[in-house]
Length: 320
Image (cartoon, rainbow, N blue to C red; front, side, top):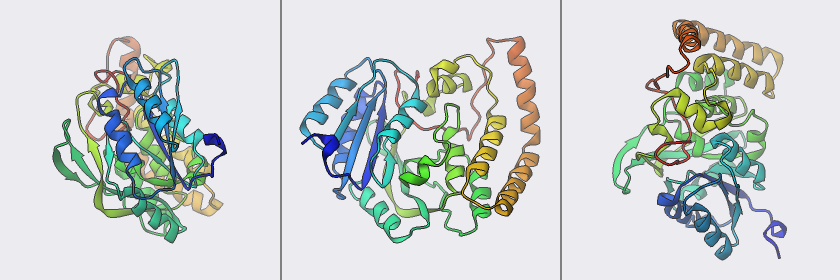
């Protein structure tokens, strides 16, 4: 029986990777070691030039839960993250970075919450930051436990908190995730996606550090300029003008428009967004000034400010 004809799993785990040979085997093993058995692991290689493809093929050949999607070219992190979601068959979905690890009980704990609470759209465990050799660095406070039934309160808190947003690697209802705009090809796309998901349901944090996020020199979080992050998300946008906050404003507005909510609720949400815009107006004006400077001097780069966040897909020395 082919993998495609097997019983549809309850959970799909998507592992996008690019030149991830260093930590890939450890990441795959941590997913396959989950105590919750009913899942598939979808690995998408984004045109790697190292041993990544060989590693993926080896696991796909020996474990029926693994589906491998190769690519001959690097289409960017956004494309690869969306690709594993498109291939997902499960009721629940989780992205699994190629350089991080999950505690064996992580999936089971998250499934339990989503099964018990139909209005919870995303369940994530707390995060433990680890170093390049797996050493524990610190327990990280994700601070995205949005259990309020008030959608405007959830959205208001989400657009105010722009950090590592490790909750993007929580367990998400697949149907709800597919109703959003997805993970866009721009810096901070994970921030706008999480904010949009709050419009579809509650977030639930498991008070145990069951996700181990690795900090190392080749991770995308080590990129130092907005231009480099933009290229990492989508190589076709290399050297194109990008306004971080302005893009987020329009993406938040688009998320509100798409949300399965009534007109009065959407108007309240637009009011929340408007107040947020007023609060960051100086930064928005500054971005316009920076854009003019970029037009006059195309070689000028924009340093990443503290709080700018992006998902991680390891590249060669941080390139993507």
